[in-house]
Image (cartoon, rainbow, N blue to C red; front, side, top):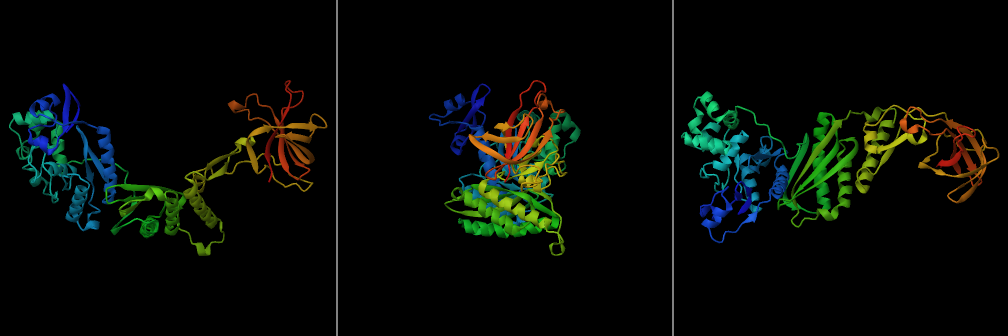
Length: 510
């Protein structure tokens, strides 16, 4: 038995069959229970652990349907709703699905009480208080589960106690005092007196069970818009078999995406073990795709990284693929395209995907231009996937006045290929104070300048708060005797505001 804190002291929160046979009841004070039964064995309740176990079981139930919900009444969540209307035929019908679910749950050591009905309220009522269960708060195990045909909810609920409507304890106590014990007693009763006596919740629960009122449920996992499932006759365990099965599922998934005119940006692979365990792998793509071969290759690369974590003693008996994020993807006519730009973008996206599967999500970044005169603000690094998907800024940044190289065989480029995150101090010697550098020492090494271009003067962005007090910069592109090219600047001007100019090295050319 499990005990939990309650009014007046610790109370029983869960009982096994022996405790029920001894006359104990849920909610009873532990002190009273000990006086009734000698040698009573109890353990502290663990609501957090129970919630985690229920969530894990709900994830496993995704093998039957993408829509799994937990019922959460006043006493806490202790069961699951599965929306099987669109997936029961994949398992041979509702009865076959129910039998398979019962057998597997019993194999896990659980004692399930199951029912299928067209409304959540009717399924809950029949599962807990159905024909094979006595009308008490702790019913026996339902051997196979019951199926209530659509439209037969009233007939199925008629003989059940009012507790099957999920009503508060005080409402049930009041109903018993008035002689109302079964649902049949209120099915045909005038509604106005019931509402006045018991409140609006009483009629709402009745209408929800009969399908007269909607009952929105919150899914444990947000259902994917596009998903595929497969069950195996024999469990698979090797990586090659997993990849091959995923490739076949991706082929079916690609057809759904093609019909909808979208491509997958995020995928989740679900692997279901016979013991109830579930392994999930989430994949992100740099651009929308429905290329099943490419996505299968990404799964293979990801499995290479986590191969040790995929080991399962009894293998995997089922697999699922869910599209967590889909984006519009226009059709292309590759054979008649005059420009290869679109193909180059698609090939680049595939390359980024492969690199990220090996090195981790977000390991590839691209520079995005920004409109700024300050070189260190002229570009920022963004995830490559966001740039390719069009989520970055698409307008080109205005380049600052370009320094064009006119002699000494120096490359014609405005900015160096490699820019330091922060300018590094350099010791510079110039023939005149405002003149170009003739030699400089950087990182302890002396460089003799053989050619230069500049200066390019960049003033601080006065409209930015963090630019207050920043001096002007005069940039020079220089080349040393070894042919190495550097980007130096002098911060400040001689004789202005009493500032002594300083030299910095900001980047190097390739």
